[in-house]
Image (cartoon, rainbow, N blue to C red):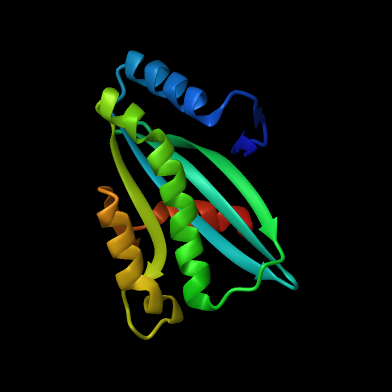
Length: 157
């Protein structure tokens, strides 16, 4: 997986090592960290573009994020696409969760799924929430799921 910073600078290390270094650097500067992981997607013609973000929040001092983009020609129903987004976020969260435990960093998985039943994405809410909570992760949906609905959304749009 190729990751980059928000400014476009590529990340050459494995993402786990880059995250570990970021945690050590930021906590060494006295920052209390929280990490939010989310994915959003956008269908563009025959392609669906996914963006997964790892958002680092420095309590009272802003934040930064690492980004992974990927395009596919797979065709999804709205529910399938929402669950693929969640699966991509969980994959990264699972890869990194021992770091967050070791360094005492709070982590949440954000799903770009609306809690309002009037929205199509709501079809996947129960499954997404069960999937994330079942993996032992904290779960946020819209409107609190800024990592997916704002940060990752900015990347795919």
